[in-house]
Length: 208
Image (cartoon, rainbow, N blue to C red; front, top):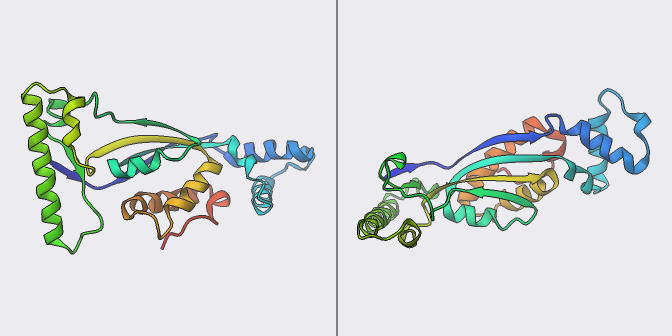
């Protein structure tokens, strides 16, 4: 059994310079295209956010690949205005060479100094792995055997959403009330997104 940490990768921000597109789209509402000039995109986008005219920022999107456990992915797919492509336990047979003949699980970030609890978690994952492989050896299909796989099973999921929805996702998933493993991937992602599109994300998310 392999144990890995949660991670993310920004696959694409579309278009490459979203502020320019958002300014052109938004100025259509006010017929103020004649005011477009160097640096006006940032000023305009700050203005529409201050007016809560957030429908404008739906014209740009971002795609992110998350490596997380199944529990976190179950929370991600609850966001409605997004597209999802996820590693399928119905079709992935983890006893095959391409998966290293083992399952991969996400290390829980909330027990770094709780070795007793961590050992109990590790033991449960190892039992689940053995049972999963026993079921496959007995002739069960991957979609049948997956019923014993743990919530900690590593999954990969690509999430694409418009930037308005990403603002909502960050507000929800960076909150101190969010699950620790959700914050584990969302806070670093928000920090990176702020460096790429600061105007649109400086005011969202609790990254303490």
